[in-house]
Image 1 (cartoon, rainbow, N blue to C red):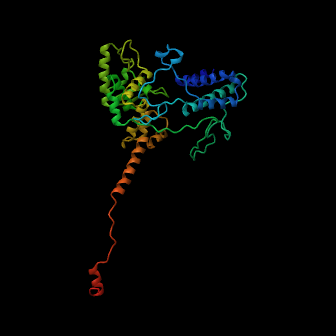
Image 2 (cartoon, rainbow, N blue to C red):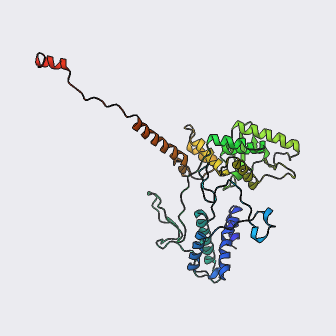
Image 3 (cartoon, rainbow, N blue to C red):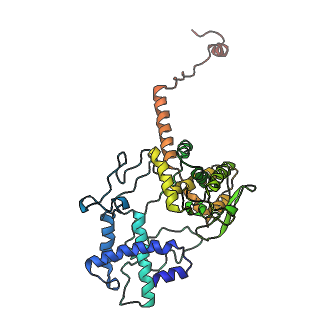
Length: 384
């Protein structure tokens, strides 16, 4: 019933899957204690959120290692990889840790609270109260319900057990590192994809929706389906991106890839020919990352494109908003904050200037003195 309501509200097809993962995690917790879903109370929700804070995430065994014995089901660790949660030496981004991230716990709390609100409104089961309540000092069911439009919005934690989510500053890929990643790609298709991601700022899955007839070389645009609105939009790209695209298409058509204006633009490199999906594109980018020992993601390419557009003084932010597909212009405010690399560079420059001042102090300026000739004129002769 809950999933049908989500789909009727014109949610993305990925929304029921994302919500279902959170619900499955809660259901397994209830099964372990023999609690029915409509008999859960606030203490059960509290214990569940504490469990998510302390428990390790389940490790998915790779299909190559599923035939091992129970004592050695885990895949052998690869050498040279940082420990889970440790920052990457190249990018500075922390690797995926063993614990549930605050964003995952916050998303789970929100999903479960809305799930129980949905059934409370419909009197489903024997449910009496929502085990995931709002914060105690909230007198309204919606944050900023009686907000004065002349004042700024105040931060209000909606859920009682919702964790504090730290603000993450978008990271860009430096130009020299981007060149190294680009050089590590294996095919013209991968180079064309990378060039279009950085040129258009489109999301990774949005670019994969492009069709062959949507790549207009004369207009230097490529058409994609937006993630939120699912509307068709043409995005400007660089000439280099279309050069790599043409090299990829000629090679692919020669091998027998389906050709047509309504056919997908991106295909797999081997038979049987299938449209390229997000997971395959992500693994392609991860292989290029492994050559550098980095952990950048495909979404970092979108951040890189955004920084490049905002650094151009002749590019109005309203146009950047339209290209990125943001609903509000204020979404770009997060890019005005200094990045980790900018902060470190500015801090090191400050220490270098301080050291230079200590090593090379300025010469002492002599104190001003009277001119002897002026004194002789004033007193009518030399002073004894």
